[in-house]
Image (tube, rainbow, N blue to C red):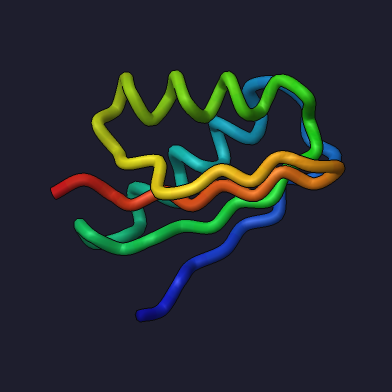
Length: 74
């Protein structure tokens, strides 16, 4: 399965969410987007965004660089 990726490192609160929203609109239902970010607010923001939009937060790895995988809803 192809995984689409975007790099949001260096972007602060809400900028990663805007980039993710744009990238997810370009995906087909069921496709996965991998995002890397380093904003400390990103884990809470991405959880809330996934819940509000109905997209699935497949994984979230927290560290110096935070990696999230999201699956576009049907």
